[in-house]
Image (cartoon, rainbow, N blue to C red):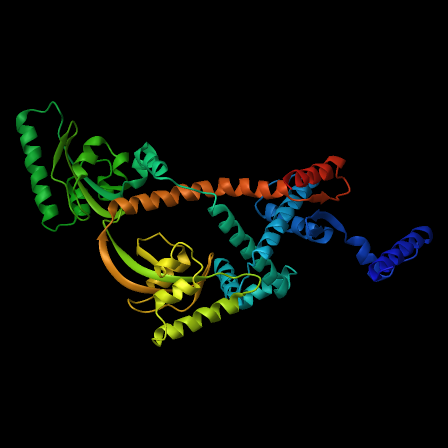
Length: 454
């Protein structure tokens, strides 16, 4: 008999005696009685204590939002499903060798503190009030980062945005609206009726021309609107707020064609009179000229036999040899990089455009001067070093629009694919639910799903 079997047998005997004689159980027996397995998830388990802890946390969050909580049995099952999927994701991360460095963990915790607008001391005090130890909180954040990395890596591979997808979006009404710039506009109206006699029309036109001359001569447009405009927003300096051209009357949108920030349109006529528009500011406009960077990189992935420290040290050693002239960057990439798409080209990524790379890579690239090699840094793909070969200003209007559209479409599909992927890994896993009120079908369905997928 193993030690665990002896312990289980002894615990059952104590429980039986206690039930028969109503004597108090030892503390250790009471703990064993309170905690138990509520779900078997492949090679792992979910315990009743962590299920209850998660339920308590979610219940507090629901109460803080003044929302009525679902019945406890419904909530328990929802939370248990959440924990089951998390267990599967963590197991996938462990098999893939996903690890979180202490530095990355510290940065994530610092962001949490910043978002809560708390100092480190205040944050620590809040953890104590909530009954959460510092080690437990760090472990929780570490697991969340692992799960996020597993999700990003698994789901991103499932999303393919084609040129046709981008073309269809850009030709749609939504695409036309999305890619158009937004202007902060000022408006002046010199009113004259469409049926007014010629002399009144002439006088209105002359007044409009005089106001236009003052506006283009440097006088404050808002002051001119207050003293001259008959428009609805005259007393607010003629401000129309932020508008996209597609949100404006066609007459206004046409008048703004070719007008730049700070410029005023020439007076144009409508049935209400003569109008002038000024573009005070512009935002969301497509960049006409972007800075491109020509960059090479070396990627080293972590695994069961190479942890973060080993990857970092390898890249640091390569960087030192390259800078000392003992090794060429191109040769180091061919021999060491695990980016299959670039290793044979010496790590050459070509000319990049804004938004092309993940944030960590973009930040390192932007902080590295031409001819220099970055320090090792980590992204969701692994550890990198990069060398910036050149930079240039390039008119990339069309390509920039397409890249941004692709990112928008990819982000939209991400949530949908994430839910599909979570359901797939749940269906393919062996899951045995051991809640007291679990129906037989709960266990049978999960086991059959696992058998069918094998």
